[in-house]
Each structure stands twice: as structure tokens, then as C-alpha cells.
Amino acid sequence: MRRSFAFKCTLLVIGWLLVAIASAQIPARTFWPASFVALTLPVALGLNLAAALYWLLRNWRVAAVPIIVAVLTWPHFQRGLALHPLHSAPAADLPGQRVRLLSANVRIFNVYPQLHADNPQSPDKMIRWIAANPADIICLQEFYNEPRKSKLDKNVMSSVERIGRQTGRQVFVSKTLTNWMGGEFGMAIFSRYPIVRRGTISFDKLSQNHAMYADLKLPGGDTVRVFNFHLQSMSMEEKDIVDSYSSKAGLRAKGLGLMRRYKRGLVARSVQIDTLMRRFDKSPYPLLLCADLNDLPYSYSYDQLADHFQNAWATVGTGVGATYNGRLPFVRIDNQFAGPQWIVDDFKVHYEIGYSDHFPTSAVYRLR
Image 1: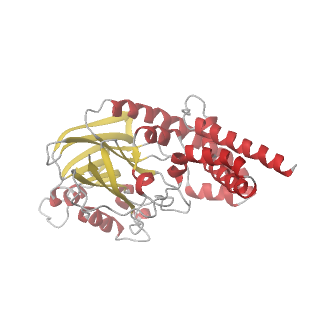
Image 2 (image 1 turned 90 degrees about the vertical axis):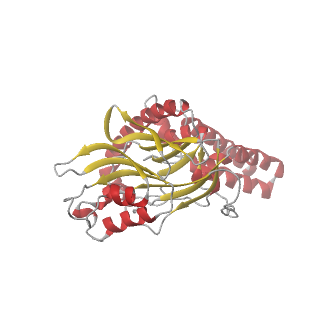
Image 3 (image 1 turned 180 degrees about the horizontal axis):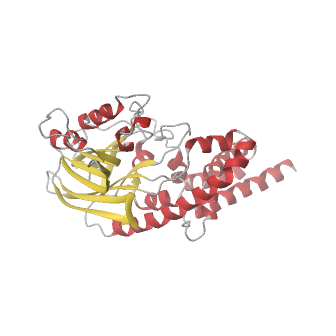
């Protein structure tokens, strides 16, 4: 009787797992509840592995069922928990053009006093670290550029000058707003390779959540296209999320409102990623993608990208690879993706750089 019950539970878990995988492929704008079902995927994956272990100890023939399911769904497991403990960066003399890429949501370089109250030097330190990074290409989300206050003051340089011109990088800034003092908000791509073409993609209206791309001419003559994009923000305060799961009272007070806001974000991101996927399909060049997805690895947005591109962390990383610098654990919303023409040699989350609420990520790619 016990084995019969356990077998039924195993079948239920497998069914749950398959439904969750299918749900991740349904855009929220079509049927938003599917996106919430997809978020349960890591639990279903874990329970299936537990079922496989249980049946290995009880009945190896039955164990074959959850084991086969685990093998077939392993790429989905890797999305949230990558396992490459023996990976090491390959030698630099391997054939193929190597490209070093840095991506970071810099939170407007903490320009407002409340953002750098705990560390007044963080704006300067962040810009200095990025400028000194050996990356060939730098993609920044939530970028801010404050121009020189005076052309006579040689010691006060803008972020564009410090990260770009001073380091020999060409600059493409996609501006969404210019304030009263001339400060520019938006996103930016910096490149040691010549920028031969550039463009901006807005989602309905141009805002901080948009996309930009640059075509870069590599030394060997190849042209590659780099996309930098920032999808719809979750519009949820970290404190509200923590309060919602800290107590029953917090869940009652905050839960419903958080779900409504999260749903609106899911719908917007599903539209935005579909817009971008159509643009990716039209690219005549090998693609590299940098993104603040504002979405988890078990979302429709991530699923669409992972079905067509290599996620750098899932390909060579080990662990969760969390990129959110805050009180919410295990949250990876910043990602880099590469087209099939690339080999991912290395990927790193820079936990030592905690100036923003996002940790920077860097990767090394090699063109096949």
C-alpha cells in the first residue's frame, strides 16, 4: 500500500513538472496564471529528484521513470542551479576571436544622496572600477551621465569620458531623459571595437525600460551585434516582499497588492521579449545579449531566450548565480546570452562590487 501511494505521488510530481514547463512557454498577456504556475518549477524539479532517489533505494525499475524525466528536464534544472564544478577558463591561445563582455545595472551611479548615504564614495568608486575593467565591451543599464560643469575644470569628467573616451572605448548612449542640469539617463554601450551601426528599440514609449544595439567590427573582420536591454521593472519594494513572507499579517497586508503588481510586470515583459525576439531573428550577425530581465529563470521571458541562445551562467557556472544585491536570496535577474556562433569560455558574478543593487557580470566569449 505504501509503495502504491508513493508511486501515485511520483506520477503527480512528474505531471506537475511537465505542466510547469509548459506554463513557462505561455506568455502572460495570453494567460497570466500560467506564469505563476511556472514559478513552481524548481520545486517540482527538486521533488522529482527526491522521487528518483527514493525509488533507487526501493525499486530500481520504478526509479527509471523519474530518472529519465530528470535527464530530459536537466536543461531546466540548470537554469536555476548550474552545475559545472570542474569548469576552468580555457587557455587564451585557443583559435577564435575572444571577446570580453561586462554588463551591469549601475543604478544611475548612486547619484542621489539617499542612494549613497552609507557610502558617499560609491559613485566615484563604481565608475572607476568599470573604467578600469579589461572588458572589450561594456553594457550598462540605468546609466547616468552628468556632463562637465565647466570645460575649464579638467578634474571633473563625465562618466562617458571616464569609461569611454579616456579608456579608448567608443560610446553609444541611448538617452531616455535629460534633467534640468543636463544629466542624461538611459543605457549605454562602450566598445574597444569600432561601432559601425547603432539603434534603439522602444517598448510603446521610450523609457528606462527599452533596448539598444550596436554592430561592432572585430579585428579579424567579422561584425557582431550586441544588444543591451532592460525589461519592465517589477515595481515592488523589497521591504514589502520581505514583509509579505515574514509573517501572516504581512502576507495579508501586502500579498494581494504585490501579486497585482507582479502580474502587470509579467504581462509587460511578455510583450517586450516577443518584440525583441523578432528583432533578434532578423540579425545578420552573431549575437551577444546583456539584460536586466527583471524576471526569474523560470519565466516566459527567460524561457524564450534560453530556447534560442546560450545562457552564459547556465553554460559554465556553478550554483545559483544570484545577481540581486539585497535581502531577497537566490535572485538572478541579470543575464548574458550568446548565439550559437559563440563558445562561452568563462562567466563571473562580481560579488566583490556591491555599490549597486545589482552585481556586475562579466564573461569571455570566443567566436567559432
